[in-house]
Image (cartoon, rainbow, N blue to C red; front, side, top):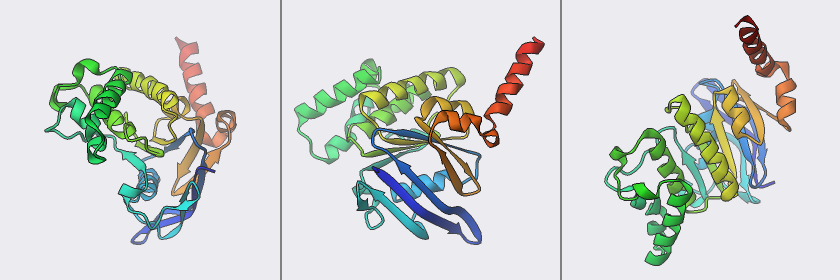
Length: 242
């Protein structure tokens, strides 16, 4: 298995945030993790990224124990809901940032960033500053900055939560195209049922620090505890009343 979290426990004071949590992620797979606020989703991502330490448990990527490694050596990128772009750098330089750190040759930087901006449908925004962009455009730049360094795993913490419905739908489709084009391996955290179904190859349901991962979307949909059938019945009732 490409990425494994094994028996992860995490407490903050007397509160147990993650309770004997385990998951497996195959290479080039996107796993949606669905859960309410406070269920432990963000804490899980931070532990995988190395931004928090588990009280117990293992994190293994391609057979290597990640726990001794600092965040910058894990090759795991964590994307927040807010894009957090560098305000003093234009779009091109924001995307190029990771390559600059690695002292990549200028010709290679220009070629790769140009290709990335084309994939993100942003070539005409290359010289704009972050404050000149829409929310969706800023999130695209954040994706480009993350993907340009070819991370082994991408951790997405409700990346579209601050966007309006139309932009959110557009970004979902863009990310799905990018995931296919760049063979992305990712965890996608959301509290939206529809979004979890759209984005994930598989789905995990997180409640009170415990995670149940379903092997197929059909298994998730057929489990009455997930709320899918109840939501379908609600919308069916609305349709019949109209």
